[in-house]
Image 1 (cartoon, rainbow, N blue to C red):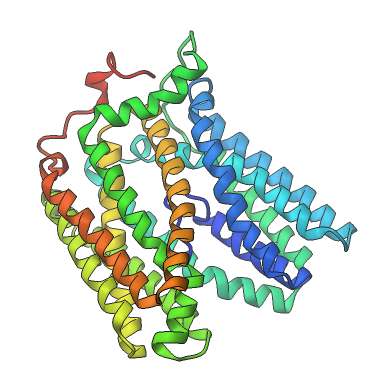
Image 2 (image 1 turned 90 degrees about the vertical axis):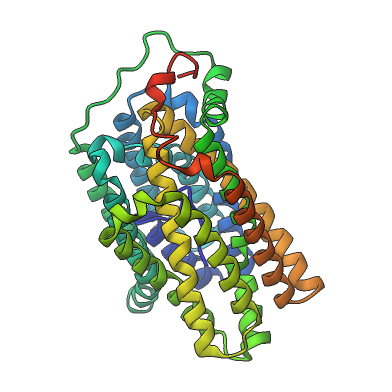
Length: 406
């Protein structure tokens, strides 16, 4: 199950990832090349996220986003030409192009996320984030079946050229966004000053520091939803065919879609009790993942997967809102870059850890371990609950600009 809070496979990017997955496995029949894809994107995005502040400090955010989109479109054009011209060595070329695109994504994703506060009034951001969540998760659900249909009914070249068209259209529309940006400093900070500025901001803003600490713990636990673990869960717990991995995957994302609708409908209530919904959501997630890991009833497993998506995504939307409320434009982009680097590295390591636990013990033990981690996050959030209250953390970074490197 895709899990990437820093934006690797969101919206258009997710369709690209699913199509490339299908293309690689169709043309090579190699699971090795297929496994290289998430590994490559994670590693390259980690390094580009670390270096993203260097670019953010030196160029306007809109320019960064538009130019990165055009570069990705050009790379996809080159990939399409290569696919159409060569029949051998294709999978290696795909990995190379995806690696370069991941480098660009590592910079573009935090910049894109930092746009929302500039486009949406503060009192409407919760609803806006919920609306974006509904769109994103709907595309997640549609991505795999759409990619399957396209691959069966067309060919790999057509899929790549369709992706090129989508990227080009999205880039044109991105360029038409009207946004009032901060002016870039006439004297750019040193390279080291730029790189560390996001980390300094996180340390100096208690709310964001607490949120990232919680997310670090929950990311370690959420890796239990990757395909390798769920496949064994279906085989050992449910004793059903591998198609049930797809059913569980879909149920999870359906729960996320419903969470977005809930946020849109009850945005004011969520804003009023942010601390409660974060802590209660963690407790509920811990309980649901424990029940999911122990059940052997297929229908109950689908229901629990759907329910698990609800608190998970509601927390994610609340996190995003708090981030947006506590940082100015440039600093927010740097914080997102740091967040992306932490999450990418954490996710990569946690996948290996949970795979080891699954193979050494059992898939039930893996889910119990994940449930324990989320419960620890719940205890930590309860202890730090004051940092999650809107009243205490309503001040923006603009009042602290003299203390935080830009």
